[in-house]
Length: 411
View 1 (tube, rainbow, N blue to C red):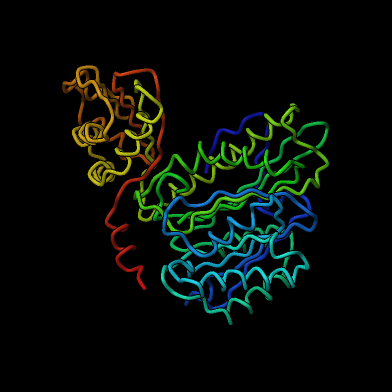
View 2: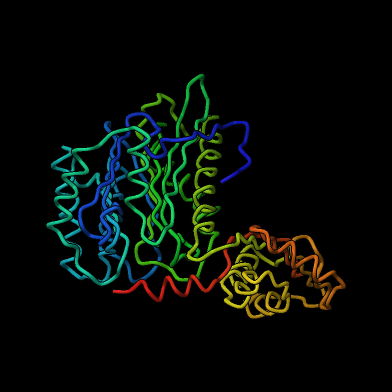
């Protein structure tokens, strides 16, 4: 995925989550999924002590590993992640919570670290108990094959996938204090993606030294600009998790007073933004990457809400799939977003072509615009004329394949 890379960082070609110093990972197949070539369990591990922070779904129905994760990350110490795909361990009651605890306990014994410093994550089908005999065997296999080669990085990125068509992995390098700081990340997500941690899992590693509180602040900032600004289908998961582990192995300390904080934040923002875009580009059945930029709103919340409403509209998304400049669907979605809007001062551009101006249709070449919309990237800019606030939401189109994928993905 081609991105503009700022001069203060270098995007690395391989390695991903294990690029930062003293990190290891592995992915394995333990039998949760039916396809043996599909890895379904993995571990991420810092060989040295580390701080950690995590964000979780705001869905009131949340999975057992989310409940345990909130508890385990409260102390700010995190050294490992154990994650399975193919089974969400959600809506599984007391047994589900005990199974999540058992995953942490098995991992802790094998890695010789406290279970409280382990984040457990799961993704997949809701409402089924974990096959703990297979899970236990998988954790043993994964812990025995930990390493820091690019192959290890690829295996963990593959192990967290469900309906994803490809792994999503990135690593960057930042130079500061004459030393190098690395940030690596992986994520999964292609459907059930909605703002506020759009079934997304994201795991980040860094060899910077940073306190848990400051790390949490940095993670919130990055997630707000990335994962909280994407939507595929407007459906929030029970398992959404974004977590970061920092082990300080680079020797570079990031503090609230130091100049390194700005660079670190920019680097983390870049990684999170890259991964968020990768989720949209791999949206279930997606063929288009759509950016919706709302300006002239009375508040940031109004701008965000309007852009999200447009991005979640099935009619807008199907029009974009058909490369149809049906601007009426866009402005009508803005009209029911529940925010103040001045129709007489509302203006809409699609791919920089003015299609609607001050409450009236604009004259434009329909055929030319339709041709431009056949490209992968589509840019929608809506001015609603009530203030000076703006925001951007990123989404994808809605295709027949999305319906097929989700009709066939069942219990």
